[in-house]
Image (cartoon, rainbow, N blue to C red; front, side):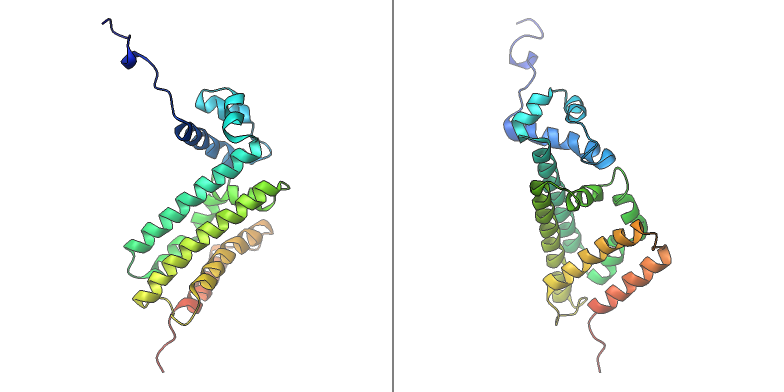
Length: 207
């Protein structure tokens, strides 16, 4: 059989889940760099090498694509937190790395995945806001699981509810973006606030 003919010479056709994942992978850098409002579906389609109608066939609307992208990213963040928790013997020592000032500057600047969460929180679209709520819930559940491991290991106080502590951590991150937006943040301030947060989480000193 001549080269380039037969099944080996054809371009493999992606199934529906693989096609959706390919589009989401292309959407992440577009949405994080330009924001939801400024991102063009045409640019996402061009990254994949398909037409705009193909994107809409898979996600319905631009908002549907953004919601699916945020769902995917939050699942990856939750998976990352789970892996970190499984590999850490001291959760209190892990938290400053997760709350690092420079890290969150990168995550919440153009190109950082934190921009997806920021966009969702301020969106006028109810579907996007709901996706943002799901994403925050997913990440918070993963953080709560990490904190429970810390409670089991003795590095996190056992007399506090892990879910409440996880929401405290997430609130700390979101409040930092508020401080940043209003020019009331610095490495020294963020370090002091993180230390105050960790003090709440550490087991009480023996009497």
